[in-house]
Amino acid sequence: MFKLFQPNKIFQITSKAPKYVLFLFVVVLSIGLTEALILSPEDYKQSDAVRIMYVHVPAAWISLGIFSSITFLSTIGYIFKIRNFFLISKSLAPSGFVFNIIALVTGSIWGKPTWGTWWAWDARITSMLILALFYAMYLISWRIYEKEEKIFKISTIVTILGIINIPIIKYSVDWWNTLHQPASINILSKSSIHSSMLFPLLIMTAAFALFSLLIFLMKYNTELIKVKNKGLDRL
Amino acid sequence: MINELLFMNGYGAYVLSAFSFTLLSFGALYLVTKIQYVKEQNKFVAKFGSLNTEKAKLAKSQRINKEILANVTNN
Image (tube, rainbow over all chains, first blue to last red; front, side, top):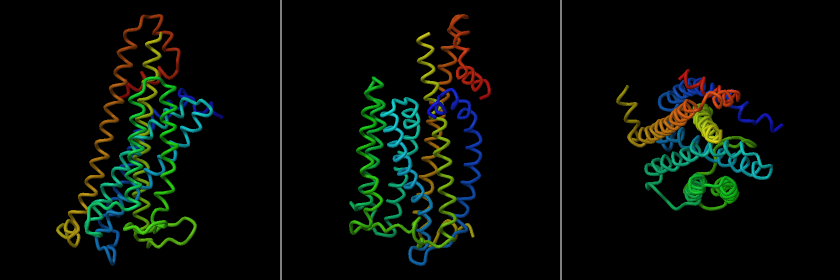
């Protein structure tokens, strides 16, 4: 099964895919922005400030999703010694980190009109900040070490330690009294968000997911070419 | 209509700055990733060009190397 993940086979697809993904991203983002900024209704309590949700929530979701994927791939890669899983993880990290920063900054901008402050050391916000630090540590581990074995080991340890923070982020609003509101969207039970707001939120999430796919493909291709560059040096 | 859209009941500055920050971050990340990609591709082409005929033939026998070179010419 792991032969499917061989770089030679993957590169054939990943080298051609970015232009199609970019086109799809632009189309979906245009629809999402029109829905989020113009067509969706204002909130009865928060008025138009609620529109910040359409960038804040998808960014937070995707940054959490990417970190979980990185942890899974790094751990499996380390156990079964699959180098390509580390390249995939490394290629996912930059967009995950940027989405984490977007979630923090847009959350801060949203906090000012709704809570009256740009920042609070609240459990949800602080745990998201800690996630950003884990992302930074992960990215730094690829830069400061030279030996591949050491990079694989350290980056896997960073992700395993960081994954402990993911359930804390998810349940922080239930476990502690926080300024941050509890989740409005539940997969297992009925969501408290109206469909007129849920639809633009899902469109924006799809746009953000496409963007992270685009960055992943470009970054992964770069990593594969780097590997091949080293191969040419050895010839 | 446009004034209403920009003002957003007094929240325009917050909403538009959040969206602008997001889109600027997207633009910056895309640009940085694209520059790194092109840089690495150019490095590959330069290294490939400096190989002698025998080594170039050997390198070209690998499918992925052919794909990389094909992509450079397509870009």
